[in-house]
Length: 148
Image 1: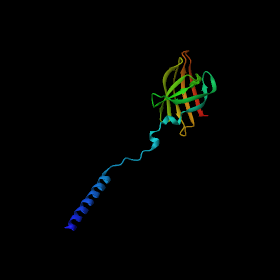
Image 2: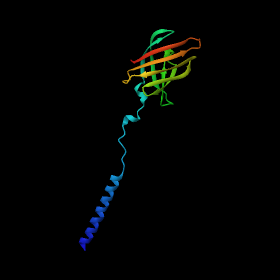
Image 3: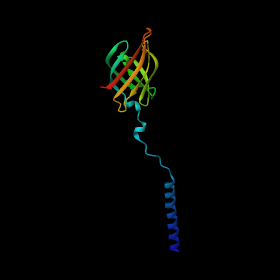
Image 4: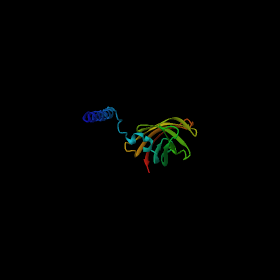
């Protein structure tokens, strides 16, 4: 009888272990999450940049532009001093992959639109844009932004 009691306990223990093993092996575990997946792509361009700008109206000029994050929209960036309009003047752009789109907007009486292409290593941004100050003469501009 003792052997039968031990056998029943052993069978129950083995059945319990087998049940746990089946449960564990049948569960689907999620893939490892890449910690960079949740990072903000705007982090790659947030910085102070030296703009070398060539304007059809003003010629060549150099000045600094700060790029920061738009706090209310995770796809937008703020370009302060864009087109040398002043450090307190903000032009907004939308980051789409390696491109910054500047959709038509009026800033300090200037209608601005264009786009910037970001180098794969995030060291240079090449912009092409138009500025209309309402005078009837549209300024066509190209600018190269380099990190300082």
